[in-house]
Image (cartoon, rainbow over all chains, first blue to last red; front, side, top):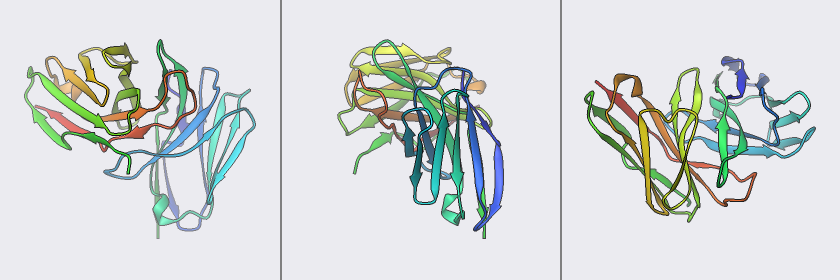
Length: 112
Length: 115
């Protein structure tokens, strides 16, 4: 039911790049990405609204392949501040609203 | 600054106790959600609510109930706490009932330990 993220964990040095993948067994109509720093609340990064869409946010960007039911988050020239746990998510219709279904999470640590 | 506030950061309870986790949001959001976060399992939806007194089960509702008597407040209740309910609990809210593609705002979480 949950989207599956890979890798589960990754360690980088500052300046290196990383890719986090999100794969769903159900059709995805939109994909959300959030980052949670240790001890803090998850924070919204971006939404991708339709297949093939790519978005960027500073040096963090994402793509969405609706056909493959996959999304990828790209972190380029990583900074120490990128450390945290990243979640992909999607919205699914409940009886009265859209509920958020989140992935299994990817822990990312950036070392100096 | 928008806020979702959870009443406790840390809680320790005994097996069999009834436990209340409280969440308050100040954004006048219609939707509120409770998740539990466990290593390797990500965020799993327990219950959500789209209006006062309205609730719907998420993916793992067993052993939990919820209450929403006021729009800004959503409570998670563990009827009889068990050790397998030891976890981090996160509350979230979002606007709109017929809207898709709005972001969720999260509280800082309550780390519950059941002994």
